Amino acid sequence: MQTTANKPIIGIPLGMKDSTFSRHPHYAMEALYFEAVSQCGGIPQALTYQAEHFDHHMANVDGVLIPGGSFASPTHWYEEEVPTLPEASAWSDFYLKVTEHCLSHKKPVLGICAGMQFLACVAGGQMTVDIQQKITTKIDHLNGAPKEENAHHVTLLKGSKLHQITGLETFAVNSAHREAVTQLGTNTTASAHCTEDGCIEAIEVEDHPFAIGVQWHPEFFTKDQNSPHYQLIKAFINETRHNK
Image 1 (cartoon, rainbow, N blue to C red):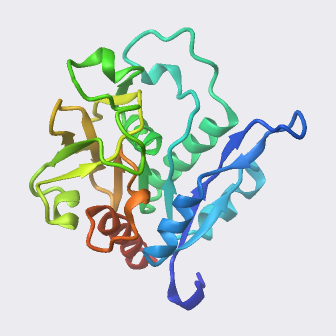
Image 2 (cartoon, rainbow, N blue to C red):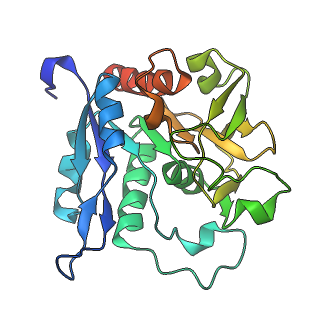
């Protein structure tokens, strides 16, 4: 496929937001995801939900960044019974379809926060509805610090792709989640844990050119080209070049 100035095109699924203008929701997604892709050498492209355009979307992007979002995941992914959760929405249905496509078609994919949870659970994992109730921790993974600030450290699995990309065994990350992955599928590896409490913070799907999920939000820190957050997104975009 053709790309502008040889830059790969990175699809970013949009979210949804209730409208104050009408009864109809708006597509919405934080601009930082798009800015981070651009800063790291890619061309961001928003992906909308129309089923008739899905194959076109997937054929015309070189990789997909699955962002975070505030929506209900499929209830069977949770290790607890969660009958009070709302039904899955068009938002989560679309994320599911995109994630399944990226895994089955070996398309490079980077999952961030909820995007990591989708990668892990589509690959056979499970998660908890509230990490604060699951593990003994002094870390407030949801509100411990603003997203622009670091909240805790992660320790990386030696030899993992994440370790190879960053060259680090530990570094600081931000945090903004209540739900968290607790069990992995047979084809998935936990490549980082919270140093302070052991919460799974990054996963990698095996037998895939690039399928990495991180629980933190690296898009906040990509202006620093020496940061592991920039290096992660840059490595993802570089892999999309090789996957053409």
